[in-house]
Structure formats: C-alpha cells, structure tokens
Image (tube, rainbow, N blue to C red):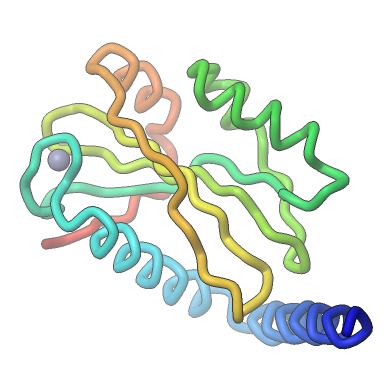
Length: 162
Ligand SMILES: [Zn+2]
C-alpha cells in the first residue's frame, strides 16, 4: 500500500517535471496561458471585488512573492507568512523561491480602482491531480495599499476585465 502511494507521488512529480520542461520552449505562450488561468481563478473565487464590491473591470493583478512549501522549507514558510501578515512588503517582494517539483505558496495582489490593494495567498500544487487552493486574502487599508503599490510601479500588471 505504501509502495503504491510512493509510486503515484513519484509519477505525479515526473509528469509535472515534463510539463515544465515542455513549456520551456514557448515561455511567452505559457506565461500568457498562466495569466489567463490565474485571472479566471481569481474572478471565479471572488465573484466581485472584495474591496469595492463591483466587477473586476479596470482592476489588475500581479504576482508579488512565492516560496516552496515542502517539509524542508517549513521554517521558511513560517517566516514567509509572518512577513506577509505583518506587512513587511519590501522583505516579501525579495522572496521568490521556486521549484517545479514542489508545492508553492504564492501571493498575488489585486489593484482595486478605489486605490486599495488585496493580497491573495494561494497554495499551488506541483501535482496536476492536486487542486490549487486560495487559502487567505486581505483587503489592505488606503495607506498600506499606497505604500505597497509604490513598490510595484514597474511590475507586470495584468488587466482583469469584467
Ligand atoms: Zn475593486
């Protein structure tokens, strides 16, 4: 039984790895597809903007930080969440640990038309069989939003649409 579990997990990892490898040749296309998937995921999860209560027209989002969540990195994950929840934005923006074979915790940020920013914490599984889960989100106050957004003026903001 245990052997079967191990085997399944290994096959999932292998599959993820090949998917990552195959995407390497058309990075731009994959990035575009990734952006579309993410945009749909955010809009489906919230329905309306948690800040202004309207549709996501004129809103945009960007990915601001990510870290690996496997056992060896548990101390790193604890730090990551502490940095996020205490609003140490510059420190958070410096974190970008990624491994296509490992589950990842990512922070996306939505920019609302009213000037507020919303962070969204999502667990992205390396295995294709394991669903991605939005774990937590927070609408920041005006001052904190302004500060964080000022650090992200050069980021790749993606328009969300209705
Ligand atoms: Zn809004």
